[in-house]
Image 1 (cartoon, one colour):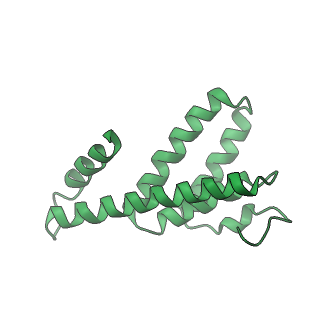
Image 2: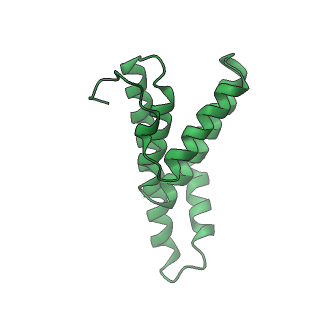
Length: 128
């Protein structure tokens, strides 16, 4: 709930100087952010379902790519979710700084419009 309140307030602040009414742009930002969060969740669920060794970078890039295509709100949500996930995982997973760096590289690649298939491992089912 706090996340949505923060999104709403940030949206209004960011859109205050817009040529369109602030509430319209804020609504679009919130809609994009919610959709981007959904895209990230879908990529995570697909990663868990696939359970395919070496495919995590692909799903990181795909989730960020899909979210960022929604617009500024989606890109913002992807960045917040990715950073929070990596900060949490780096202390818990035990995979180390190198894995975290590689995950963040895949996140940024997808968020900046790069093709997620760059990270797609051979043999991953076409469903994903």
